Structure formats: structure tokens, C-alpha cells
Amino acid sequence: MLRRREPVPFAFVAEADRFRSNVTPPPRERPSAGQLAGRWLLGLTVVAGLVGSLVIGMPALSADQPSPRHQQTQATDGR
Image 1 (cartoon, helix red, strand yellow):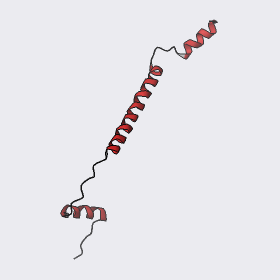
Image 2 (cartoon, one colour):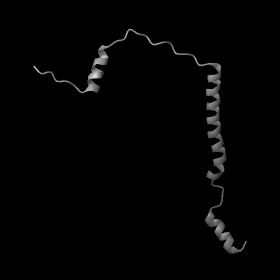
Image 3 (cartoon, helix red, strand yellow):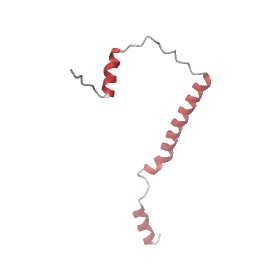
Image 4 (cartoon, one colour):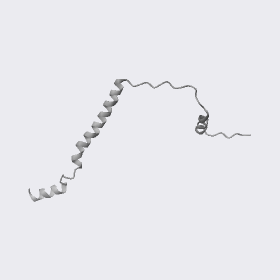
């Protein structure tokens, strides 16, 4: 009787369903006040950068500016 073996990844997944550990992981450490402040500062910096790029980029996206072709026709008229 030859028993057919599965490839390693599938065999590991199949055995993982049967295996239960009796060791509980240690509790997660709570971040310190400095770490929390650093995360908030980093988040605020990223948001401020995005808002600033929108504020600076909005004039370039507005349709009120004359097109370059219109400026060329004014130059040829002698204005």
C-alpha cells in the first residue's frame, strides 16, 4: 500500500486545522503617550500635505484661465 503524499503547503494547511496550541500569546503592549502623539502628528502632517496640494493645485484646474492659443492670437494682433 503506497500512500500518496500531498505537496508541503497543502499538507501544512490540512494539519493546521487539527493543531490547537495551548500557549496563549502575551498581551499587546499599550503605546506610550509619546508614540500616540507621534502618530497623530504624522497623520496631521499627511492630511495637511494633501489639503495644501489641493489648495495650490486648484487654480491650475480652474477653467477661467485663457488658453495658450487665445494668448497667441492677441500677440499677433499687436496688443
